[in-house]
Image 1: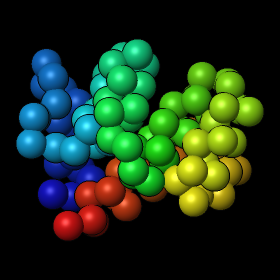
Image 2: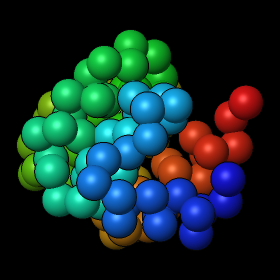
Image 3: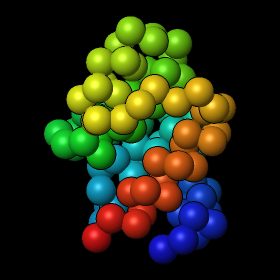
Length: 97
């Protein structure tokens, strides 16, 4: 699946169940449901889930908490926009087998 196809999934009522919780979290975020996105990110207890978790706390404005999750995810704190980060995460997670 490419990024355009992934973005189109945000138009559905809910993300497909065969996506990882981290990818589902990105889609819930795209739909404006931060709480559901956060729940999904927390459900995936690995670096991918941690990365989405970090992004969500950065978006929320809780930079200290975001910093913790970026460290857990082994990712640098981004300096670009939230949209750029969302796209970078989505591309990276879609490229994972």
